[in-house]
Amino acid sequence: MGWSEYILAFAVFFLSHSLPLRPSVKTALVARLGRRGFGVAYSALSLGVLYWLIVAAGRAPYVPLWERVGWQGHVTLAVMLGVCLLVALAVGRPNPFSFGGREGAGYDPERPGLIRYTRHPLLLALALWALAHLPPNGDLAHVVLFGLFAGFALLGHRIVDRRRKRLMGADWARLEALRRAAPLWPPHPAAWPATAARLALGLAGFALLIALHPLVIGVAPLP
Image 1 (tube, rainbow, N blue to C red):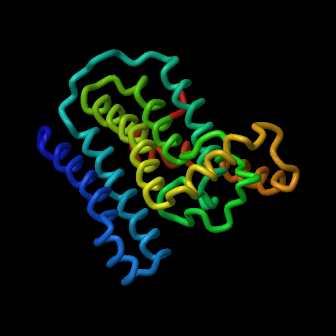
Image 2: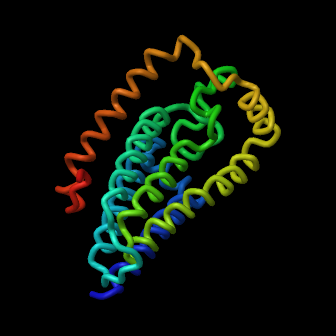
């Protein structure tokens, strides 16, 4: 199909990440599916379209930009370990600065945890995932794919900040000041057990990704 499937997959990806989040569309979908149902459906749609986009990049015409060498795969593995740990620490946590999900319900501004380091840990994880996959994928289709994802994630920080500021008003500035004033280290002792459990899940997720990568993507990540 040449570049046609790749371009179509990109168009569907951006439409699927913009139309469902429009206030009128999201309100209607949440009313029909419930907040949790909307989150599950939106996540499933996002993952499905992302998988199609990655597969389409592999099917696109191969235009080499740089050659693959041994150290590149090690960089990807090292960064992806950090990505898995970051996602495990962030997912499902209350975050008033972020988008969707639980938002700020249950958030303790005196103990922001991971939010002390970044307001958008999941967007940061997406950017790191994309950048980590650039070195060993030096063909045009994959450079465009991962480069746009990295830019999309980094630009998303500003877009989400603007949206949350508009919705939260003065409360955003108050919570941001408390977030910046919280100590960077050490974590609060009460959070240690949950943090350790999440890190263990992150390691398990990393091992699972390595095992599934050749089956799902068709490329073995280990040297």
